[in-house]
Length: 458
Ligand code: SAH
Image (cartoon, rainbow, N blue to C red; front, side):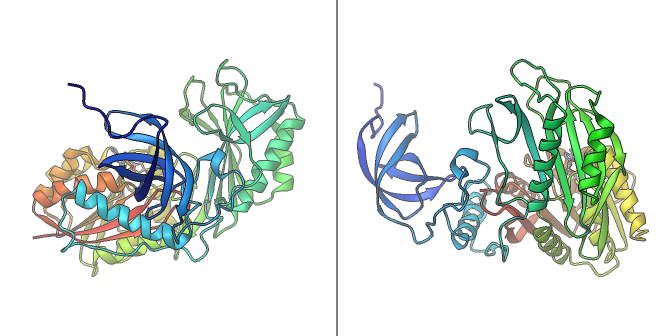
């Protein structure tokens, strides 16, 4: 017999919201059956209309909000709903920080099966002023009524909406992107058209070294020519003397991946500089670099504290990028080994060690799950091991090697609580205990949360 859901399409229900999804929708239960409702917050009471019923859940729409959450606020951005880049602007900042801590606790329990009576999940470390924090903008370029537009893809569509100002972006980035759009327009530059796979300019990326004031501009184009190159370079550099590097990346493919494989410097330096704490970093176009410099310092300080170094340790920094965490650690360790998959990032890491006079850090390009087992066979073993993987978390082979290598401490930096929880479970089963988890708000107003976790060998 076909089981029927306790809710029906187009029917109205009075509900109390219990939770928030990762996309920022409220979750209410009708006879235990979850209904997801955009723009609703935990603890709010409302009348909703069910709009779609699926196998184990349903979607609905807010009809009448009867009791508001004390965390509800009016989203300051006029294009908040259209854009979708932020998910939490309708929650005040205090509420966002609490929600992120709760989200981390929930997944550690649900996915990681951790006993939260013995793992401390600290309150989320937030920013004093949580706006204009992003140091990097990557904007798609399109055409509207003959002219260029640059901004964002309208939610669930390929239409590009023009945007002059983003509230979480460094205003310097907005200013330069606007100017480049205007300059390109004057020279009749053609935007890339995704559907017809025609045109030239796909994305403009700018990256701003907030501490140094240096900027990099990257043109991501379909082909490797550059119409009116000299004139355009001249205009950009005359208007913006702090632009130190202009790069072209070529992406000839029919894909929604932003970058292609070919990158050339077309004007100025190969990299720009920034500093975090007292360490200076050179950053090239294809290297990963954290987007919120103020909170990066908070995160790295926490990783350093959890590493518990006294100058005698050998440390491995897996997924090291341009050596950011490695160099923070090197100052307090005997030796640091960093490994990272992007060759340009490893070149940057080596250059950064030299730039800062750090001689006890070594870097190797490759997959962490291949290089670290190889090091271990060669007799390199860590007292403290730091991992900072991408969203998909650590490879199983790496976790197995960690369990065999038995470093006294593991510091896990994570941008995805779900895979963090999964990997902590593996490490716990392999003889580690998770002592503390510190959520850090690297991405205010979005539902993303960064964590730093400390594990010790039992
Ligand atoms: N710790 C650095 C970078 C963290 S981002 C920082 O804070 O700046 C994650 C990094 O892992 C990226 O630089 C990415 O290129 C790298 N990466 C992704 N998969 C990898 C793998 N299998 N092995 C090694 N590095 C990898």
